[in-house]
Length: 380
Ligand SMILES: Cc1ncc(COP(=O)(O)O)c(C=O)c1O
Image: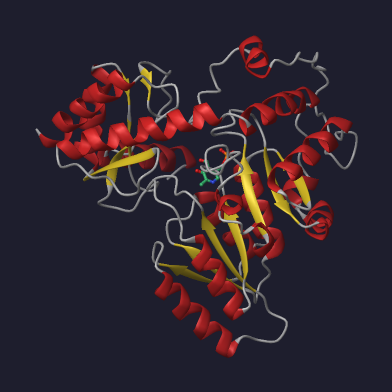
């Protein structure tokens, strides 16, 4: 069998299982992207007006080398300091993507012999960080504190000297739309001497009075080791960042291969961050609309006895098998709603779903029509 035979065989299998993937241009009203606050479509002029502030001219200079070589630019010091103020964190380190940030952080901090407990629904980049780091792993049942505590108790009793324990969770789960019990997780970590890392990819911009995320909203900033935030969701920006101590930042700058061996983001992107952060901090109206739209949509679904898990703007309508989930998504797409089916390996087998992403700028009447159409798609 040649290499090409291997690939064509694998692709044929995916077709047969209904899991073949291909790109599709966006069409219809967006209920798929993570543009929760509606910033991806706003023009820079409109954004400037929103804040009554002039826009600066962006430099076109590209990254072209690692930040540790000539890729560093003063604008990143400014962005990092603005972000650190926003989160009340000692230090912030910009990374090129959330995937890169999670994988790099975990691969750098966890060493073979350390022990890491991660929620079983953790995103692929957390899983891949663990694959690289090769610590001893404990996947706890989703949001199950007693299972997590079993693991901690067991590990703490036999923990080898000099070995660390970490707990990793998302704050708002990307495919399930529910939140982790962060205060309880942090208390357990403190009881057993573990360090906590929280991936705030889907909560950044949307939770807390100034949008800085779930950890800050729960006043846990000083009790966690690090939080990871991406620009790629509600902030609608390229890049991501890690919040933590100055020492953590210094260690990552010296040891994190995902930072050291990759080209820096272009400085022009830093300009976008400088413009967007103050707007997001004060986007109280957008956050209010996001939560109001979510409530209205979920209530309308409940009229049909459809009660997706969680209570937030990621709304998973669980269908079960792959083919009916794909058929339901296609029906909605045919009506002008861009809703996609999420199938394994993104979610566990037998839990294929419609993942509906609610945004601040969705129209209430359109949301009601979508809820009616979802009911028809999954109940007919
Ligand atoms: C929970 C979670 N963490 C991290 C990431 C990766 O972030 P980025 O898209 O910036 O690479 C994603 C993106 O899908 C995510 O859902």
